[in-house]
Image 1 (cartoon, rainbow, N blue to C red):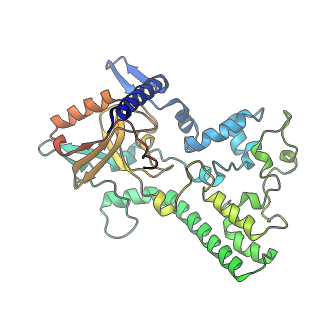
Image 2 (image 1 turned 90 degrees about the horizontal axis):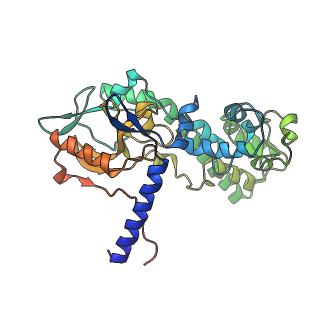
Length: 366
């Protein structure tokens, strides 16, 4: 890599670390005279939310609430007040409802707890002492260990809801495209039959709300938009004059196609990276990240940690270590301390790919 590129990367990393240090919460435990990593400030919204909704989505609604001049506190506004009917293009209400981060109970934590066998440096599940392979999606059927069945049972409700809605939207899209190809007219009866299952799931808000787009912007008066008072909930019936293109736009909205980072299919979205957390009391937790459902904060319920990042494990052997966590943002120092500790426990880092501390975007063009 050319010297000028390396210098630019070094300056960029230095600036990033400076910003990170100023933004990252670090807690000094006087009892142990150590520092722990707390959540980045905006992600405390995930902890404060009783539903633990994905903070990146919640923050966008919080910005909209700031413009509303509402007398309600944010959570009441979002769930019961004037914000309850807002469905932002960059943060679909469908995903706000689905992406509720699982916070593991103390009884559930042991399912994800990992130990390092001192004699070999091999990573084993504490629950059954079997070697850890990650990333590996939790199987929902077939041959599974008791631990895997328990994990699948814990995730089934959230993942099942996502899969069901993904399939309904995919089926509706195929039907609409086929109807357009055949030159079929979008009669009210045909539209109602097609959209009824999705409306039952709480989707297609823009096909039922005459003020869908207007809600995205704040009202010019403190009292808010007048329609908030006259229509406290969305009707179940479709608006008049709906056409096939309107349905396609609603499908793409609920699929997250208008987000800053558009979603892929449900299958692709679930193919996450493996993440780990070394919590403040010492235990190591590992699992496959499922965006908006299972992530770093899940293992410790938003508490402080020593280290958090990503890894790759094959049959219990550490293959790759990634020092990245949007929730906790570990610096080089804590990762190096952890590597030293794991080395003492028998992990052979001569065979481990330790990735860079800075994520580098792929080069554009030649």
